[in-house]
Length: 461
Image 1 (spheres, one colour):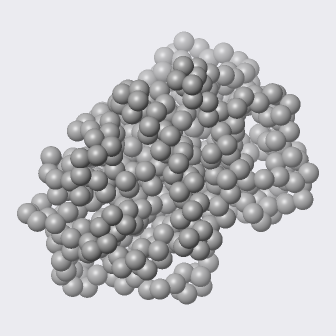
Image 2 (cartoon, helix red, strand yellow):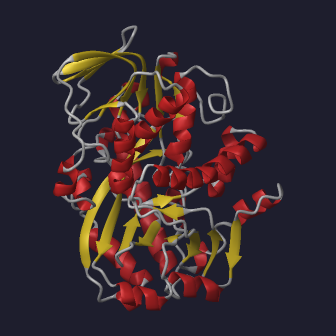
Image 3 (cartoon, helix red, strand yellow):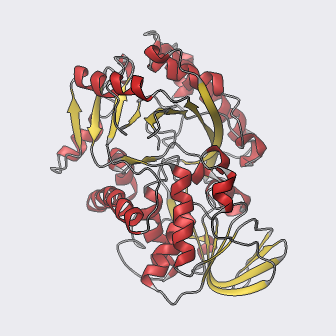
């Protein structure tokens, strides 16, 4: 999937990360070479430079969700209500502020390590594209205002339309801390920084078996890693572990990228790198690129039976026409702009819409972090701080925060999860289509759509 964003010649010029072909020993083994795994390795190396750290990655670092997302680097301010369900108010405020700080930390890290990922900190517009969506942000703003915290700026209708490049945006609030990146370049830049810091990376090395011995061992096709600590950072692929299978719902998010049309974009008013999301539950999210394209994504695509991450989550999306339709509906002036590429990827939706971290089976030597729910580009950096503290068995603000919890909530068993989930998704999709048309859904549609978990959030990164 990296080929959607990077050409093969560029990949071949990078330092090689060979496949594992022997049995080795390490202090820490991280399974998964995406954002979560790479940031965790770098955080550990920063805190304990002497650690021997090995990362095993099924394909190439960034080939999973990290290399094919929309590239939104968002904070958790809009998730303040969800944070308060698991944390004290003080802790929820601290975590949300820390997530916003991570955007600035990422900018500094990319500058220090010469990671050219088109980092643009031009903010995020949380918008309404129909009357039903208007004011979706109000409860969050009111809750934060009670604590004298005001990360959002409410814009007038004219300002929203002018800055977004389309009068289909009726209202919205702006968060200045947010940024956008070219996601695959960020993933590969983190990989290069990890290699330069002495972290071992083994690509094309899938985990075939997880031995729960003491110490635990990761068995691969041609070798193994026995480590004092193992970190599971596999995103949706973590459902391969029975203990985590019902903690998330694997659902697609689907993206199209347009042909280049920089001059028309500039004249529309959407001239910078501002990220935009609408306020539907099956959210549409979109941004521009430096070379003058629009990357437009739509959440809430298709489900996987048994939470298996199969081949349908790779390559071209079957929803290309649907997602392109949302783009042209939002930007009717660009109705003649062609789609140059499209793809799909799996999202690890948690019940709360927030990630969760813990000790697998209560063991201090097996840690995990997942459930980023489509907003992992920025929060994985904060999640790495949490995982690093868990690995080092530190008792601090990270290891003892409310996101470290024994149970993240369980989705129903199959076949209820799949068939019930599909029914809810279809009801949500119908309800939001009617919202676009200014029509009211019937009581049956409202009832079924109302069963959607909080993890199907109104915003997407």
